[in-house]
Amino acid sequence: MVVSANTFRSVMGHFATGVTVVTLNCDGVDHGMTVNSFASVSLDPPLVLFNADEETNTHDMIPQAGNFAVNILTQKQEWLSNRFAGEHHKMDDPFEDVPVFRAATGAPVLEDTLAYIDCTLEESYPGGDHTIYIGHVEDLGLQQSEENPLTFYTGSYGSID
Ligand SMILES: Cc1cc2nc3c(=O)[nH]c(=O)nc-3n(C[C@H](O)[C@H](O)[C@H](O)COP(=O)(O)O)c2cc1C
Image (cartoon, rainbow, N blue to C red; front, top):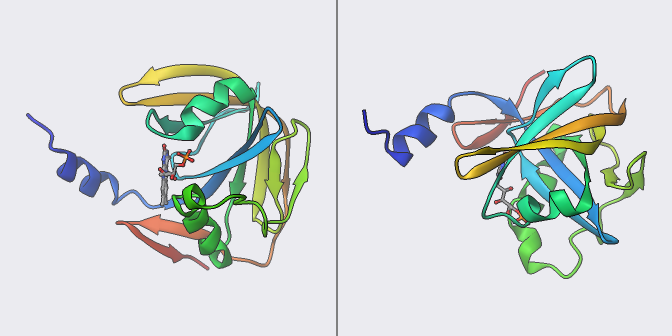
C-alpha cells in the first residue's frame, strides 16, 4: 500500500497528545521547539525520547548541545507552543519575555509549566526524515498542580480536566 502524506498526517493526528517545548542551551544560546513526539522510554535507567525533523534547527543543535529539557505545557501556555512552533524564527530573542531557570544540565527550564524533565543526550537513532533523541534524565520536577494540560488532537489545541 502506498501511504500518502496527507493520510498519514490525518490518521496520526487522531492520537491525542500533550504539548511540550524542548529547550536546550547550545554554546551559550538558548533555543526552543514545540514537540508532541515526547515519550517515556525506561525507568531504570530513566530515559525519555522525542523525535526531531531533520529540517529543524533543533535537530542540528541537540548533538552539539548534548542536553535538552522537556517542558510540559499547561492549557494557559498555548502561546508558548505557538511561539516555539515558528514564531520564534522571526524574533531576535524568543526567550525575552519567557521566565526560565536552570536545573542540572544548563538547558533553560520554562517556569510555571506542569512539569519539566532535564536531560543529557544519551543516544540518537535515525528514523526516516526524523532523528530519535534519547535523553538520560538528570533532574525533573512538577511545577503547577492546579492547571490542566494543553492537548493536541487533529491539528487543534484543547485540554482535559
Ligand atoms: C503541537 C506541535 C507539535 C510538534 N511536534 C514536533 C515534533 O515532535 N518534532 C518536530 O520535529 N517538530 C514538531 N513540531 C514542529 C516544530 O515545532 C516547528 O517546526 C519548529 O518551528 C521548529 O523549530 P526550529 O527549527 O527552531 O527547531 C510541532 C509543532 C506543533 C505545533
